[in-house]
Image (tube, rainbow, N blue to C red; front, side, top):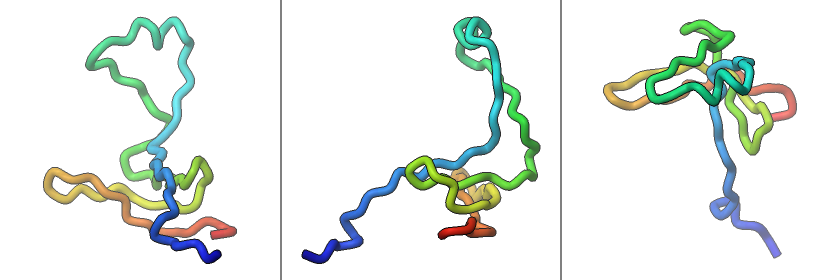
Length: 77
């Protein structure tokens, strides 16, 4: 029985950066807290499909929308 590709669902996530902080610091954070990331504004972002890295890209802001422009597909994809 053939699979209809239109019915396949993927979870897409974009990683802007990472940070490691102690749990006690995380628990003290409230609304408006800022977590510093290990990346800069112009660094490429990583696109994940089902938690697997599939591409690199850059953030694009169009009016009040934020998007990702894919610049490189990673090996195996």
